[in-house]
Image (tube, rainbow, N blue to C red; front, side, top):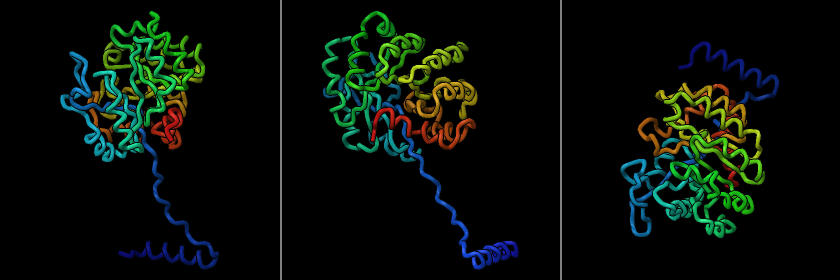
Length: 307
């Protein structure tokens, strides 16, 4: 309905255009932000070509397949994801299949048997596998000692020489990576999940462990995934107990060295993919729109050189 106010406003606007020759500016369409999830797991049922290790338990009771992930990504507005093959085995084949079928949606940070120094022979040609961008290593349980007992010593110089970015997860052992970062300045090291989890949060030690992660920010080759945040929060969405911790990490690393990720199948029921997106894009007032562009996708694409 054309009201008196609308009529006057439109008449004034038209008159101004006629007298000045300048047309009123048209509303610009909303800018599309590229959203990249820096970590999810995909897996299929155990089979002869994809055998699970004995006794392992997946994060969900049913497989989280390519076909299951894609519609959820679309629903949440996620353009791309980095697949980290789960700890069910050291097999990267299913993740690489996803990258081959959907190269513009999936890429891979692959697993490698760290306990076998012969794996070093794989690294020079690692990125020749289509869709493979780097390596993800975990130091959990008994493997936590591999950081310092010599088991993984072969890996860091070999990965640096091969030009491979490395994501690492080592709850409680973050400080052990300072000498690694210092000795290998050409090795891009990415801290997973800020190296925090539910147990650390419940012990009231989140600030302490965030401090260990922040201490590594002085090394230019170290960056950090603000990922799987639902396992570090003791509150429901929008996880306000993490806001100050996230600001501390962001202030230390800056927008170009912080990467959003979900590890979606971990604590799957605690938040939807869309909520994990809006937690960053709508609930963190210290981030500018430019910051969000970097954190939500641009930074991880540049760090992993995913064109």
